[in-house]
Each structure stands twice: as structure tokens, then as C-alpha cells.
Image (cartoon, rainbow, N blue to C red; front, side, top):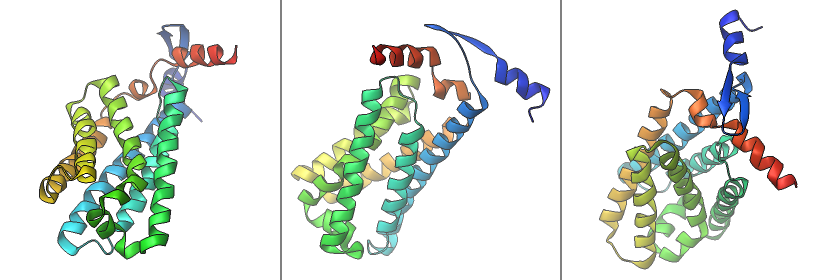
Length: 215
């Protein structure tokens, strides 16, 4: 049962671009799930690279799985005005997850990361997963102008494309990936200090676009 304070928050009316709307408890719950998912993705990315550097790649692949799962959940709860863009990011994520599965069948789980490091073309299999993560970072920068978001959006694709075409040596690429992972972690942590309505966006725009697609 809502207490009076929560009831006021629940019923607060906000003026949007295309009409009034409210931020509900369900909206706030989705935002919390989104933020926790982004945090889990950042932790997995950072921990995976750290374990790879310290203990080797044989078991670090497990962090790639938790990263993929948490990214998928984040893309479920993310709020993007354009539905088609939202769906494209989810499709990239799904293709990347399928690529991980195919690589595990091809080279084995313990050899997954070492195969990605030694054979650049294998990166094409899971590249869409990181494209989806880059899209998430771009959305965060576009909406909130956070410097860590644009850093993630720029460094991550540059590092992976450089590995794919052999432009930079492995040390520089690992450094760039490590910086990207830390930036994602910072991005995730900073989001917990934001108002839930900021992540929801203008719900009247969502409703307007939904009506447009139904015509």
C-alpha cells in the first residue's frame, strides 16, 4: 500500500510535449532494473578483462556471458523514443549472443577469448553484441551528455575495429577496452544519482509515436 508521500509522487502530473503524463511506480521499477543491469554489464566487462590479464583467458569467458545477459536486460528496460532503433539494438544483441554460442561450439568455451585474440575474423561473430553496447552508450550521451558515455561510444568500436583490421597492436587495444569498461562502470554508477524521470523521458512522446505507427 502506498504511503501519502508515495501517493503524491505516483499521481504527480508532468507536462510533456504532446500532453500530460505521470511517472508511475512501475516506471521507477523499470528504471531501477535498467540501472542495475547496466551496472552488472559494467562489472562483468571490467572483471572479465581484469581476470584475463591476471589469470588468463581460460575462465574469463564466463564474464562475457554475464555481460551479454545483463546487456540484454538493459536493452529490455531502456527507454528509446524510436522503437525501430530500440529493436535494432536488440537484434544486434541477439546476433552477438548467437555468435558467442557458435564460437563456443566451434572452439570450446575455454578457448573462446584466446581464439578471439588470435583470429580477428572471429570478432565478426560477437561484434554485434558490442555494437549494441555502443548504441546504449550513444543513447546515454545523446540524452544526458555524460563524457564517460561518449568515451565509451568512441573507444569501444575503435578498439574492436582496430583489432579486426590489424591497425593497432594488442597492448593498445587492451588498454582501450579497459578504459571503455571503466567508463561503462562509471556511467552505471552515476546513473543512480539521477531522477527516475530522466531515464523515462517524455512519456507523451512515446504515446504520440505509438499512435503514429498505428495509423
